[in-house]
Image (cartoon, rainbow, N blue to C red; front, side, top):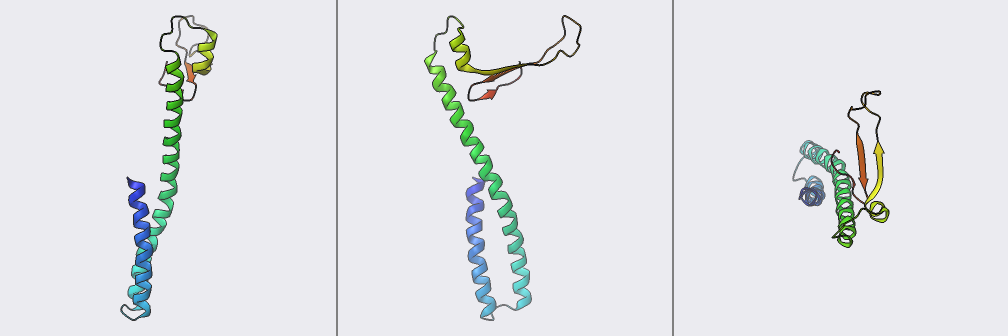
Length: 127
């Protein structure tokens, strides 16, 4: 997983910075080498610090999505054999229906977009 790899690299960079600083202080590398290496590590750290929150957000959204699908499946298990569409069933599975204006206003047979938002999972495909 990319998040784990980047988190591990962030820890490695912190350790590298410590060693790099010690090497500079102990005279193993000169100041110019230190600056050159530190700049490269700093750029990489900045990139990591930008990407990790994005990944955290994506993981949060995916986790929420999975949770919502699980809730919808739990609802669906209650109604395995629907023989009649009742208001209760309709309200259980559908949170809202949005009917858009017709593409051609005064024609009887023009297309019209209808969006059905299901409880917990939102809109699924186009109708």
